[in-house]
Image 1 (tube, rainbow, N blue to C red):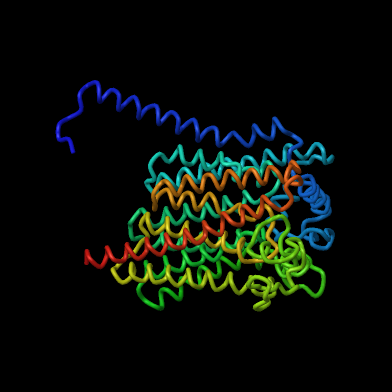
Image 2: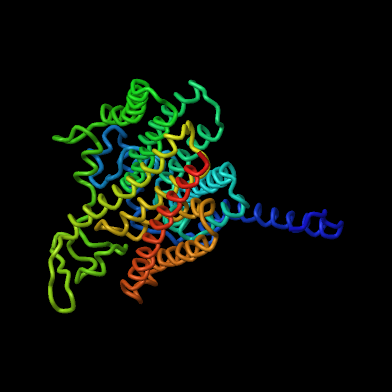
Length: 461
């Protein structure tokens, strides 16, 4: 290690390199913000026609009266907020013809993508990840970040923005480090409200509520020490969570015998889980004779030509998903319990990064184990796993994930352009193998990291 100061020439070279890196970082961030707009402008016909057409049809039903949306629209199978930010927004745009509404609607979705890029930047900055503008720009520029949302013509970017807002809320509350009753109640009220909005957006985001609810609950136990205070806080979060849902259910009209629009959506919506996969990937696509077949037909597990036993993918997938996430939750609870016993009142940056990784693992696990996966169901995985790994692990893992995200985006491009038809299900099998390896590698990294952190705490105490 050198102990003498840099020479003038070395200092000038260092400052020039820093300025150049800063310029590249800002350029990457700005490019990520505008890139979806450029793609939509340059390729106006590159989108998923049937999804956007569905939203346009929903807008016609919304025009007849939003309170009757689930009566007038048989194909409206999103929760209320998701129906509003798709069909409702289209109606507000006041453009009658379908061909004229497509571009404005996708530009509106591109604004959501741009806000998500900025949210990623703020989160990485607050978590003290080096070169935050550059990495936020890279995450925003990944094909997996924009093909499946604004370019596709889907609303998953809205759910993503809500999740990022929830993470920002967690950062705002914890990293300030000040004990404040007003701040605390603002946090739990906003947390409950944001989780409610997530549930009201789209079914895909429901899996992510596992992490969001866990994060909020751990925060309650960290900040409070009295059981009565914890119980009161849980009640407040529950009220903030249920109030928007109850308002919707009491306001909209429903067909009998449904008492909640969420019940109606889940009961009458698309039955994705009844098929093995719809151009997505999971472990069952390797075991079932037909990757697009029924998930209720038993699959035989064989040793060579000898059958060992059979499983029904639908029920076995739910069991594996619940078991794997219960096991992961156990290790997370053990880790945070160790932090709690050492007097932690707030999350630190590493805690929040670990929760981002948990969020990513939940989204990856349902893609691997549940039936009915679609081509875009991995949308909520890559931004969060890359953000987490940037702050927790060696950058070599980040580069592997970037390659996976790029290939996943390429597969989405192949789906929209119909290029995948030349390769059948092969691209999704490749995705399956890659992500099975990634899942178990990430689980091992989590276990090693939490074990080493708890060991460090024991040695320092």
